[in-house]
Length: 422
Length: 206
Image: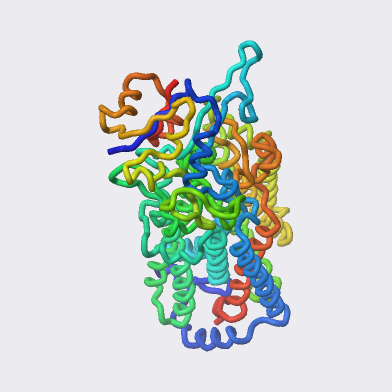
């Protein structure tokens, strides 16, 4: 532990309990003081958008989910896509914050608590995306009354809830550790638990899809580790972009050396993610059997824009992060955004790709409940992407994202997320 | 006991009578079909495969396969879809369903599960069907129940009754003396997607 406690300097997020009393006062003072009109406006605007999202959600429930583009043959849509993305986004913060503490290595400067706050906000949004997808949200309590512990969805609800609570506890423990109320050992234990839980939450989210033998696109053992790597890509991207922004606003100090460290990590994660993608494509394609359909759908079929989009965005992110002369702050932010968008492309491929390939290759009449583009018949519905979101889905999804942003900004304004400055 | 169904594809003429009687007996709302007759010739229903005079088409009536190893039951987070231990019928509890549609993602049999995307509506203004069939609800998943309201009273499912070519058979697959068990034992048959390992209780005679 000594190497943790001896870490010095404003840019290090390690703790020195000896400096506690001063830090406690400072933390209290800062918490109340920070934030100008811009931040307040940001909170107000995001709260307003979230409110509009809630109104649209109520409309969706009262008027029926027929207003969405989801139908029997493509029964999940934008909400579950965004759920996958936001579970991933929640990874970065917690892992970047907990890995240095868990292993007793140097961290990334004073971004630890901001990073965990981003995790909390992303987890709130992820849970909200599941809720808006439900047909009967008023029956949510049944999840706890009639839990089927064999269902991957049930595992996810348990792990996601634990994850949210743990993130909050972890943030609180960090603040209290600075005030000398939580020992470095206790913090380290919480870090380890948080890290394990973070890996679990991505694996379990992957298993919702990966354990379904009926969907060629999803059914692969690689999906869980792949979700972890994708989560690291977009999560690191989020932390890098958010911290660069907060650093520019003068909230935290996010020096070049730490930016470069994070950028190198981002590059590694992107390359690992691409490596997994390559492994999966080869395994699907090599037997030249059923999996060929998946490869064709991705590389030259309806999902090609998202497939090539992901590849190009990943390449851009990796190049920016790996070439030293390109590692300027604006370009690193661009690389982070590219990394997040790349994972969004991946999520679209996964979700739509799961429904795009049907198992029963038989023709029959269609009704408005059968499939999104039912007017043009089964053949027409599957010519392009079988699913594309309806306007109300965009609105509700925007509202949920705004909810996440609002939670984060409230944290920035009211919580002592800045590192102690002693 | 394991209720099962045997459908003779050599007899089926693709008339949709079974689908209609299912729809009316269970009071299915507009746009909802638990039992659909599909054809194998092309992209549209009843498209022939091959060219005259060798054109052919085979029909496959498809509804819930009431699998012995159902993918849907495993994934339902609240147990709203469950296997009836006495009959092997995969049932659906509308009052419990939270509308997460996990079962629809898990079921390999494309399209047998349907979700009520809006308030159930009826083109004739009111619901029809068996008085004791469970009323349909908005935003829950439903599917063929082997007409549980009938079969639990010792009757046969509605789709059995009007088939003009008598292509459908119903009974207890576990009873070697039953008509279905004898057909499965003596005739050559296929099942839908046997590779999925779901062990369907519906057999197609070919």
